[in-house]
Length: 435
Ligand code: SPV
Ligand code: MG
Image (cartoon, rainbow, N blue to C red):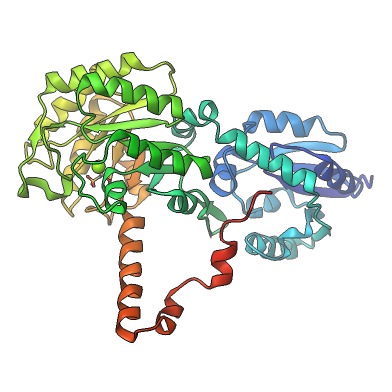
């Protein structure tokens, strides 16, 4: 080892195999090696939820021969650590020369230029055994017992959890995999919302609790089959308390992380109709009975029952919304969802401030379909913990398909619609085969 030189590598993996140890040995032969361990938040926002959490990964890497020091790396970008540590070399596999991580590599080269450091790249080992190992980790994450508690873990890890609607295997995959790299940070959705509106719409039915629970669970199962992220299930009113307890148990057993029920009764209509249609709010007493019955039915501490308050939707006022929120928490609700259909977020903000003045711990959930100008950062400042983008995939997919259908009808052939469609080659390889 050249004792006067220093080397830096970054690690996100929780699965150390021969490929990693061999590159670590090569890096260590260049000088004193520091490893930057990506924090849990970074790993889960670009790859997958870690099977071994940050502290465990640190211990694992510290124990490898040749590793001098382990430090946290709080973004995918190396810039911050490189400017502090000024290593002579940054070592990486050559897989980042192209593709998603290329901008990160470009930035490393720029920062190294500032003080005369060098990049050293070794051929990336994509041995089929390592690929298999990674796949088995992912499969592990999709198992019900591992998956169920993930929402709770995320809430402990992040100030704000962002969730997007999914209503099929393919929309589940979009929710699971879509990644954006922006200013050295990566962003992914944290989980999926199994929306009653979108599930019903995808089956050509109105959102009036018409789909039976077996059909709704079938959708959940379809999503679960191909994804690993936590799922929040929209159970509408939850039905009768006597039925709700059974459905809660099924959802918990399936590995769903949370259910949200709204405090309405009778024939439920979608909240975004507001007072344009007749909708009846449940009494506080009845709804609390349903919440506590659901809580008693649970077998684990991982599953959340979240109460959704419809007072603002039904124009019953802020005081009603707040008194319901505190009553529902007392009845055992693990979280409160406050809904509004106003474009102006003022009433949502007022609710958050007044709720947080008395309760600083219960997670708050919002669905900003109407008040969509508010950023996640702003919601987090107001004390919100979960943001659900409840219907955007359905609302974007539908007009795109309708436009293509119209184009084919107009031209009596498909040629003119071709540019609007994903190329055949891409659709054939969109979902890689496992075997
Ligand atoms: C859903 O997505 O089905 C919801 C949210 O319940 S909302 O449509 O805004 O009522
Ligand atoms: Mg719904």
